[in-house]
Length: 209
Image (tube, rainbow, N blue to C red; front, side, top):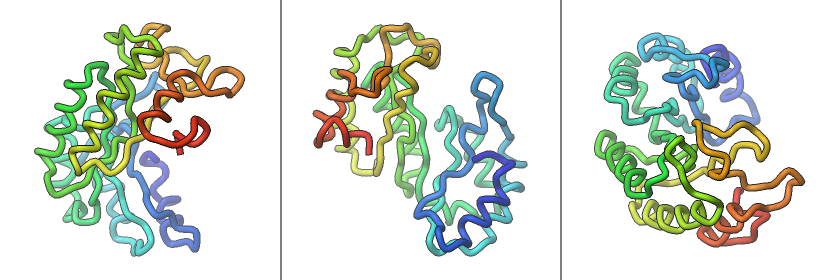
């Protein structure tokens, strides 16, 4: 959601079909290809105040998902500006794009160090950046190295792979061979999805659920 969706979110959390979880603003600190909205933390807190003041017994809020969750300014300023709203946010969202497993793990640990009383959901994970030199086999190795180490931390509750579209432009300026897509142009599992299935368990058809 973004700042235009707050009224709809209020309706949603009061409805019979209220979701179990609701992620607040997606990358308010970054505009994807100048198509998505950004907002500073103080006005974001003002915008969401009426949502925080709305009873939502069925719905747990997830923090705004920043492009850089470890930015020392955005989330701390949001917390300071939202009149106790962080008591309603038990989960910090993290977007994690780093082709180095050790570097990725360090960023998760850094985030936990800032918010030690919160759980973490990695809502976007991928090695796809301009520095990625992996092919599908390398991405499989990356998963096999990183994901078990994340699970061992104990405070990361969920991990979501960000695959992008098979035929979409490469994300984050990644070279073509560093393609994190889980299905091919025909919708069939790629080698990356098979690797994800192996590290997470289950069949290739259910590994993303």
